Amino acid sequence: EQEIIEETVGWIMREVEWPGKLDVFVVYNTPEDLPKIEQSLVDMQASTSWPEGRAFRVMRVAESRSKAANLNAALKAVGDQYVVIYDADHHPDRESLLLLWEKMQRRNVDCVQGSYYMRNLSQNQFGCSPCAFPFIARIIDAEFFTDWFLMKLVTRTFFLGSGYFSGSNALWKKDVLASREFSVTAQTEDVDMAIQQLLDGRRIEFCAESRSGELAPMGLCACWKQRLRWTIGWDETSL
Image 1 (cartoon, rainbow, N blue to C red):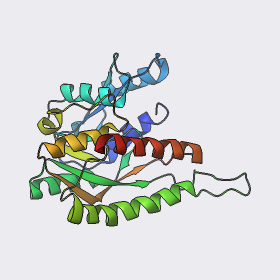
Image 2 (cartoon, rainbow, N blue to C red):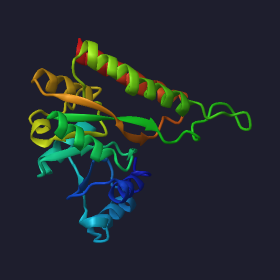
Image 3 (spheres, rainbow, N blue to C red):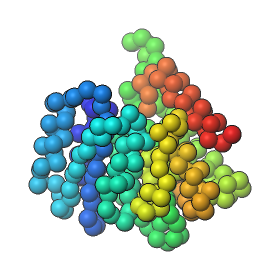
């Protein structure tokens, strides 16, 4: 993630549409110092050239060993009424945040979860050049489209009666999200948080039209490890 974080920050700060105040936080942990990237983030924090008065803040969580601990630390530092969460590889569509906000106000819910798509369709190779084909991202992209625009609609309508938090591209009422802590032991801290909030009676809606591009795993092994973690996370949360 250290190789892509500057690009992601620049994208969100310059491209995502939002008419009011927008502060972007990067909260991270690392077992060893990363002088080059950390100094670059500090320089970005000091910059006054961000558009529309937007501000960037970076915070290293020394005691953290997980994404969950980073999120918990970030929530304590955020003073705004609303918070949107993005993973480090996410490039939200320009109007995505506005769509999340509009649905939150219209439906009076506690969280609105947007959708994902693959933004590196040509980078995931299978085989050896010149007989290689970038198919992994394309398969995942097709799966995500079916999931977000069909299966989650079915789940929302006939089973759960509600949407659920999926970890990224989600707008929350900050006080609602901060009422619970992300689990530092769960395989999938987002699923664990979603279940906690739903059991508390919180209202979560999907907004598939609010889209954010992420990076697909670069090979079959990485994809397998990702999906195995997701499966274990859902099992440990639901059983």
